[in-house]
Image (cartoon, rainbow, N blue to C red; front, side, top):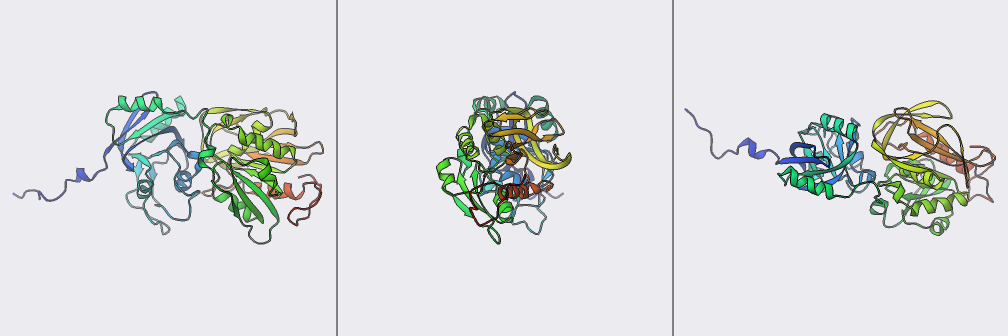
Amino acid sequence: MSTADSTRPDPSDLRPPAALLVLEDGRTFTGRAYGAVGETFGEAVFATGMSGYQETLTDPSYHRQVVVATAPHIGNTGWNDEDDESGQIWVAGYVVRDAARVPSSWRSRRSLEAELAAQGIVGVQDVDTRALTRHLRERGAMRVGLSSVETDPAALLQRVQAAPAMTGAHLADEVTTRAGYVVAAEGETRHRVVAVDLGIKTMTPRQMAQRGIEVHVVPATATFAEVAALRPDGVFFSNGPGDPAATDGPVDLLKAVLGAGIPYFGICFGNQIFGRALGFGTYKLDYGHRGLNQPVMDLRTRRVEVTSHNHGFAVDAPLDRPTTTPFGTATVSHVGLNDQVVEGLELRDDEGRVLGFSVQYHPEAAAGPHDANYLFDRFVEVMARRPCDGPRTGQAQGTENA
C-alpha cells in the first residue's frame, strides 16, 4: 500500500485564510481572504453591474465604502493598465462570491486579486452575496467590517460600531487633486471649462476634450477668484464621495458661479451640490443606486435612458412644479423610474435660456451604457449660446435658447 508523500503540501494549506464580514446590526458572514490579508471598515453597499469592476474599484466616489458585487463571478477579465478611472483603487473593501481563478482577456496584465493585494485592499470571497444583498435591501446600507486576522465576530462588531458613518462625512477633500492640471482639447479648442474635482473620473475630462473643450481641473477647495481667473466658458462639478449636506465650500463656490452667469454642468455629487446651491435639501437613500442598468426618464423628451449610477444620497426637489431661485427657475429634468428619485435638475433664466443643468447618474460611464453621452454635447450648446460681452476662446456665441 502506498503512502502520501509527506513532502507534498496539504492542499488545505494553500487556501486563503478564513475571513469574517460583520455588519453593524450583528449579521455575520464567513468566507476567505481575497486580495490583501488584514482588516478594513466602511459602509456596505452593493453594485449590480455584471462588468466594469475595474472602473468601479478605481472610482473615487466609492471612498470609504465596502462594495458587494452582486454578479456571482468576478475577476474574469483580470486587470489591465488602461481602464482605471483614477490613480488608485478607492474602495475600502471588496466582497465577491466566486472569484475567477484564472483571468481570460487579451488586455489583462495581472489578476484582480493580485491588484487588490498590491494596493492593500482587503477583500472577502466565497460569501453568499445574494443573502448579503437581500439583507442590505431590507435593512439599508450600514457600516461593515472585513477581517482575515480576527476570528471573533463579537470583537469585530465592536470595532464596526465604533467606525464613522457615511452620514455627515465630508470626503471630497480627501480624494481631490492636490494641484490643478489641464486636459487639452482634441483638435481645435472651442471652449474652456473649469472642472471642480470632487472625485472626478478619468473619462469625464476625456469626454469633454473629445468635443473640443480645454479642461482645467481644479481642487475641491478652489475659490471663485481662482475659477474666474481662468476665464471659463463653463464650470463643471464632478462626482465624488460623502454627504452633500456636509459639503459647504463647493456649494458656496457654485452659488458664486451661478451668480456670475457662467454656464454649469454637474454629474452625481455635482447634481447634489447644484441642488443645495438652488436651495433644495438632500437626504440619504436606504441602499442607494449602484449599477449599470438603471432606467431614467428625461422629462423634457419623455425618452427613457438606461444609465450607470453610483449614489447613496439624493436631492429633495418637487417633481411636479418649478421652483423660483435667486438664480432663475429650477425644475426636475430627469427622474428614476424605479423609485421616482430626482435624477437631474435644470436652471433657466426669465427668457427660457438654460443657465445650468445636472444629472445624478453617469453619462461618461466608461464601462457603459452610453445612452446619456449627449449631455456633453448639450453642455457645449449651452456654452455656445451664452449671452456675453464677447467670446473667451474664439467661439461664436448667440442668444438662442439651449
